[in-house]
Image (cartoon, rainbow, N blue to C red; front, side):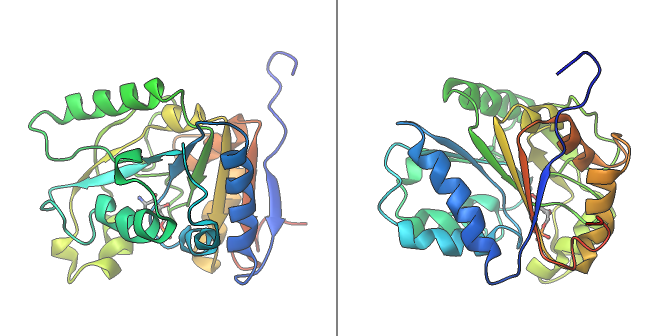
Amino acid sequence: MTDGALPPSPVVRRLNSATIGRAAADLVMETVRSSDAPVIGVATGSSPSPLYAALTVEKGHFGGTRWFALDEYVGLPRNHPQSYAEVLRNEIVEPLGLDPSTVHVPDPHRTDLDESAAAYEALMASAGGIDLQILGIGRNGHLAFNEPGAPLDSRTRVERLSEDTRRANERFFDSLADVPTHCLTQGLGTIGEARRLLLIAQGSAKAQALHDALRGPITPRCPASILQLHGQVTVLVDDQAGALLGR
Ligand code: GLP
């Protein structure tokens, strides 16, 4: 790459809901088989669910892997079913037969959350960094819980959730009042250090955000626009989510 030139555009593959999970699982397994100690970054939310379901056929083939969550709510009691530690226990630890001690989530229960964020960064670094980061995208263009306005070089930290994101996640809780107001999230700079990125997006609610992320300017107004700065990005979309991307 010459000075100032952008890396190659993200590779966009259009699939349907029946095939998107398997295609994503193939990429994960490629990474899992590529080293003795592969490190996978995992997202929560509905987007990666087809991937995790497709990975269950590989149960028992994840020895040596380590897994790092993108983010976690702050303020939920330990073992709350919507805490991302619990979501990941149900979505990957049990179905994939993972050793729970290999699946890491930022710790929202420490008194000093800045320390918690720093410890999480240190743990990822000691694992050798993330080989493949799985991502969803928020309908406001957020990545993990990096809301619009987050610095493109941000690191793991405490953040306030936007009202749009709280409303989007209300479906997982009894009411909007129950949705936490804060979180710990990997930063955009942290995410950008993963060696490979895999974004999954389905449904028309993601179309504008995906367009802005991949075709718009690289700006904190659309956190997912950092994908354009990374040379190894695969985006798996259905026709609805990819509707504004052009052919
Ligand atoms: C959530 C998560 C993100 C996720 C995004 C999209 O709030 N923190 O990591 O990618 O929002 O969620 P979904 O896949 O449910 O649309």
